[in-house]
Picture 1 (cartoon, helix red, strand yellow):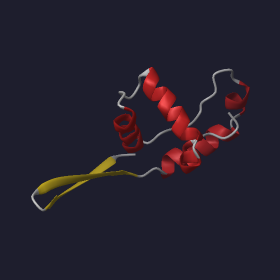
Picture 2 (cartoon, rainbow, N blue to C red; picture 1 turned 180 degrees about the vertical axis):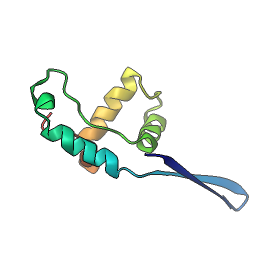
Picture 3 (cartoon, rainbow, N blue to C red; picture 1 turned 90 degrees about the vertical axis):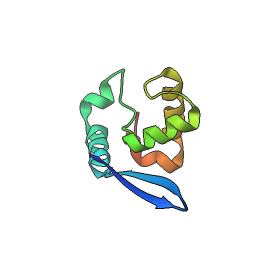
Picture 4 (cartoon, one colour; picture 1 turned 120 degrees about the horizontal axis):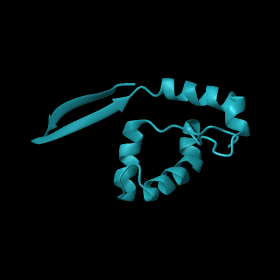
Length: 91
């Protein structure tokens, strides 16, 4: 799940494009969704967020990754239909 960076210059401005293959994360979410342990635990896992998405959300909400404020924002985004594939359904 390495993060790839691509840099290029556009009208004198350096642009950095970061990308990440999220297929392994989606597959892990599917396994966790089917896990008996995840369904019976009081502390169930909500989902997994790729690092490039977490960095974007951190910039949007103005809070560092790992803070309570970021956690609340991430939970709200996971519940949004646009990011539902990152969520472990049934939590």
